[in-house]
Image (cartoon, helix red, strand yellow):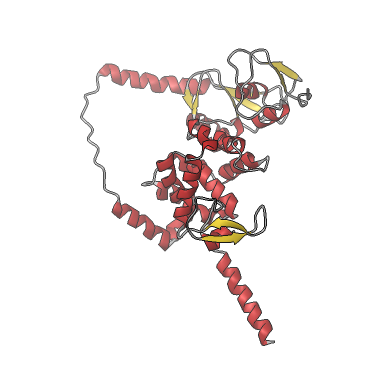
Length: 349
């Protein structure tokens, strides 16, 4: 009986020891600052780094993370001279790196991408374009799972990790608090914020006084009136492809303005329209709900200057579905006159 009780006690202790972070949210709260620091040093989107950390560790639950502070599953390789541990991954008892601190793991992950030839094309991508980075990682051979890019994108969008691509190491804790307001009741987190505030030197910005002319004041008023009229002229339409709600942008305007007018969050508009930025241009098509998985016509011939995203908006079909139907690598663009399949999959040659 004593043996049974002792074994049960060990099991309970082991269980609690293994669950340092119980949710993805807690993992993000703990390691977002590391990802942002790495973004500043190596120009890798913080959203990508955090999503990979979440995925590799199962939200901080993996054995490698718990026992080896290894958050990205980096194996020993021939150039590693630090501590190691055995772990079964692709094969039994493989050699993995062990770090003294998770921060070292994050930096090693950055160096792994920055200093290897396979990933050189990633650093030609826009840092704010997490989707391109996700697909670029898959294309470069980072993972064998054919859905790896979409899994990363789902992690990013589900947890709004793209917000960390817009911040910096001095403001990241404020971004975390904005995302998780309940942390204001967490004494440890708030103490960390106080310490960060204390070590950040205040910056004084001198703004020279400028007398504003009547003409400039009038221009500002005209701009405001013009923007209001532009917003008023935007009407909801029904797309031929399934009656999806969309609008046509009459002039250059911000996504924020559209978001406020129609009561739809910017993040949802970005997700539904697969946007990489928040500026909209004249004649852009913007959907107010998720697009379809198939088009309302069988095929379409690409016009001069059209991208796959342009075609997806024109026919109300998701970009990833469009690429899949046409057996094209994500990021490739159509040639003039190329037949684009919108319903069935392009026949194999």
